[in-house]
Amino acid sequence: MQRDKIQENNIEAEKKLSRRGELIYYTGALFFISGIILLILGTISIMFFQIHYESDSQVVLNIVSFFGSGLIILSLGINLMIKQGKKGYAALLIGIIFSAFSIILFLLNYQKNWYYPTISYVLISYIAGLMTLMGNAFGSITLWLIRSNSPQATAKAKKISREYSDEEIERDIENAVKKSLELAADELQFDLINTKPLKVGNAAFGSETIIKVKDDIKETYSLEQTRNPGEREIWGGTGVDKTSNLLANALMEKPKIKRSRFKEFFSRHKNF
Image (spheres, rainbow, N blue to C red):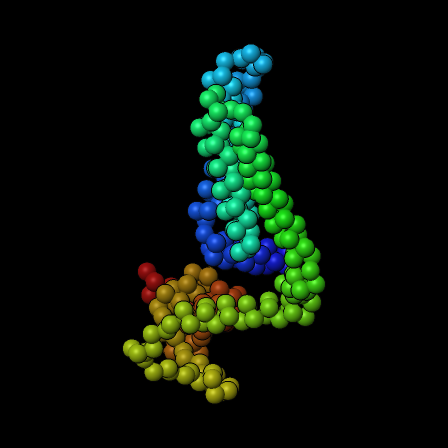
C-alpha cells in the first residue's frame, strides 16, 4: 500500500506547511534567488572593470556592495526556507542585525573614514552576521536530520507504512463489493402500485388432463379434398383434430374408402 503511505505523508506535510505558512517559504525562495543574482552581478563587475588596487573608489564600492549584500540575502533566504525553532529565529534575528550594521557602516565610512579601527568594526560585524546566518541554517538542517532518524520518528513512519495482509486485502475487497451491491439495490425501484392480480393457469396446479376440441374449419376440409381427390368423409363424425395438430392430419395420406358404384356415380354427377 505504497499509495496510502504517500498520501498520508502528503497530508502530514500539508498540515506542517499550513501551520508555518506558505508565504514564508516563497519569501525565502525570493531572497535566495535575489542573493544569487547579486553575486553574479558582482562577479561580472569584477571581470568587466578589471578591479585592482588603483581602481575607482565608486566602482569598488558597488562591487563590494553586490558581494556583501548578496551573501547576506542568500543566507537569509536559506534560513527562511528551513523550519526554525525559537532559538533559530533568535539566531536569525541576531545575524540580520550584525549584517545590516556592517553594510550600513561600510556605506557611510568608505572613502572618507575608511581606516582602522573602522575597517575592523565593519569586517567583524559582517563576518559575525554571516557566520550566524550560515551556522543557524546548518544547525537547523542537522537538528532536523537527527529528529527524523530518532526512534520515535522511525516508529511513527513504520506505523504509517505498515503492510496489509492478504486477509485484510480480501476483507476490504468484500466490503467494497458489498457496499457497491447495496448501492445498486437501492437504486432499483419497481412501481408495484398499479399491478393486476396474477392469473395462474392449470399447469401451475399440476393438472395432467388433456382436452381435445374438434375443429370444423372448412379450409381443412378443402385441403383434404385437394390432397386425396375422390375421398369423401362424413363431416363432423370422425373429424380430425386440426387446431391442436396444426393441420398435420390433413396432410397425411389415408387409404381410399371403398364405395358402391351408386354412390360414386352420384358423387360425380353432383360435382358437375
